[in-house]
Every structure is written in C-alpha cells, then in structure tokens.
Length: 372
Image (cartoon, rainbow, N blue to C red; front, side):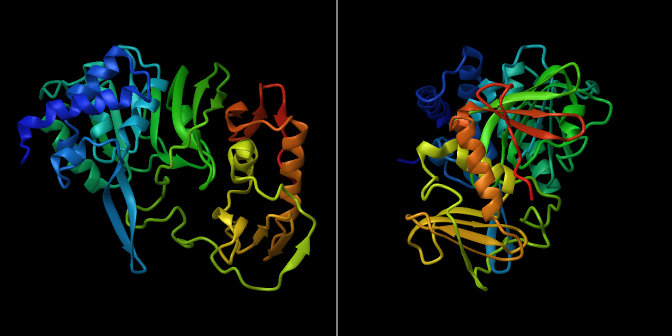
C-alpha cells in the first residue's frame, strides 16, 4: 500500500513510542517528536523509512574514488537521549553545532515553542544552529520555514564563535569532537551545559559538561558512544585532516617485539574505561579488535605512521617513528592504579587554557597523562 504525505503522523507517533522504550522522554519532548515531520528533512527517502529509528546519510563527498559520508540525520533515539541530557527549560537559549538536515533544530524549536518566522521578528531566536556546509544550511532553512520554524542559522566552522556577542544556556553538538574548543565555553553562560560526543575516533562517549563560575567545564561521561561524523575544517573535504584523509594505513616496515603493555584483549565490556583512555590520550587513527592478518587481537595506528598490535597471548609487535608501547603501558598502569574504572566512571575538567584532565570515580582521582 502506498503511503502519502498525510500518513506521517501515525508514523511519527509510532517512532516516538519506539524511542520511549529506550529513552525516558519528558511530555514536552514526546510532543516534539510526535509533531515534527522528519520526512520533510530527508525528502530523498521513502516516507516510512524516514520514521525508522535509524540514521540517514544526507550527504557524501567523493574522495579518491570513495563516497565518504559527511552529514546525516541522526538516529532519533540517540538524538532524544542527548536532548533529554540538555535539561532544557522553556526560557533557555540553545546553540546546535551541526545543523545537518535541520530535523534536530526543528525539534528544539518545537520544544521551546520558538517557531516565529514573522518578517518583523529580527531579534535573536531561542534556537540557533551552525553547520560547516553552506548547502546544508540553505536546504535546512527552507525545510524549517516550510513547517513554520525559523531558528537562526549560519554556515561556518562550529569549532569557532558561531554568533559573536551572544551566549547560550545550552549547546548541543551533533558532530564528533576530539577536544572541547575554547569557543564553546566562551559562548556558554555560567551554569550552562554542553552535550557532545567526545574522545578519539574509535571509542568516543557522550558527556554533559557544566560551566562553572571560574570558566571551567566539568562533566561525567556516559556509557554510550554517539559515533558522529567528525568536526572538520573544510566543507569540501571529508577528512578531519585533509592532508592525511585516511590516517596511517601503511602497516609495513621493520618490527620489534616488546613486553605486553596492555591486556591481550581490552576492546570489550570489561575494559571500557581503558579503551576510552587509550583513544582519548593517543588519538589513534585506528583502534580495532583484529590484527593485520585479520585474526583476533588489538591493532592501533597513529597519524605519524606508527602502529602496534597485541595478540591474544599478550605479545606485541610495533613499528614506526614513535614507540607506542611506553604510553600504552603508562595508560594501563594508571587504569589499574585507579581501580580499573569503566567509561561511565570517568570525569573530565576542561580549563580556559584548553587543558583537558581526565578523572576516575570523582574529581579527586586524576588520571595522569602518559609521558612521551
């Protein structure tokens, strides 16, 4: 049976009900998901597909013969999880970093009843959003206007000041971040909150950070990754670092055997805190649970071409200009010293001078960074 434009409301209601089994939605957010037509923001997909709890790629960039996804409409249940973490109040202002399709901005507008698009309403809106890709911003603006939503939109680098002279009560980031840019704290009111997916490429975790009066950001990681596409500097290129788009993939060269620096297997539920810390501190281009030959183990590569692999017996082989064995050993020793914390036991403090300090269990037990 063919579905039509008028059939979307039951589909939205069913999606909202599905989300509610995973995320405890407030009445306000339940209403927002039920009343926001997701299909209007992903017109390329069939109506019923738009109301599945799945992410939908909306743009790719071809580089070296491969279509790299650069933007998507986020999985609705993940979006709901992060929106609930915002602890949004009716009078709050919110900045979204990563406009994408515009669907999340529409949800925010509905939640805050910030739908005015009147020509005379020239002042700042409660909802603002920025995206690196001007084409996505233009398309999102038209789709938002078509349903009577008029947030402030701008094309630009989300790692920098989006709206000069303005500060927000909440910031939600729908892109992967390796570190918290100073501009985010600068745009946040005291007591305000940032919800973002933070960490390395392989083991990011969602965190809510609160801004203290002294300018510090304090937060606790959740046992949930966002797996967002990364923040990047160039709208025309899919990589975080256009000079090294595919990371360090040359796994040849002279190898050397070392003592085992980490447990033989640590990409599992028993070692979530350790895996996060390795990804957070080393920022590897690759952190996977198989060796070069495809057999079980752990393989780590870094930007400078260094790599290390650990087999199930704890034997490690490494090559490249930088030895990864020593920092891995230090990270593992710290994990053990801190009583083997899980990812949800980890805290973060970000200071105005851009220092990122990891803690375990509380803000008294600091995870010391590995030394080169």
